[in-house]
Amino acid sequence: MRSLAFASLLVLAACSDDAGADQNKAADTANVELAPGQWETTTEITSVTSQDNGTPVLKAAEKTVVSTCVGEGEGRKPPPAVLSGMEECSYDTVYMSRGRVTAAMSCTEPGLAGKILVSTEGKYQAESFDTSAQIQTALSGDGDVTASAKITGRRTGECTAAEPTA
Image (tube, rainbow, N blue to C red):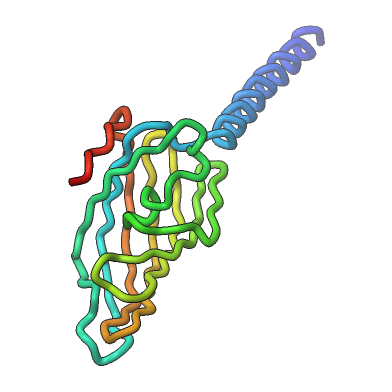
């Protein structure tokens, strides 16, 4: 009888250790944020649908790469270029918690008159992220599109010094 009671206690203790490990893992996931440093964001347009009779401003299979510094304390709200893959953006909304990210951004692109709206969602870890994005242009001329894209990012090291402008 004593051995049965002792075995029950061992099983209970083992279960408690697993539960504690699960709680620690959940706490680690809840606190994860993008690590400070230089980040490389790659955007690949996967599909494009023209919204008017103009020549689309984006093309399927188009790929861009942007490098951005994430500063100390910016891991839960990095510069918008990190999540959008575009240099000139501002957040409408951003949510990063427990390894999930959703963001909506308004962007501009040199040479285009109007806005580019980027909505993205996916998963992130301290050193990388992988999201799917919906893009919609609102241009003053022809060429408006809706597009889908895959946006990925990875930390490449410490922040590099900004290059001087001429």
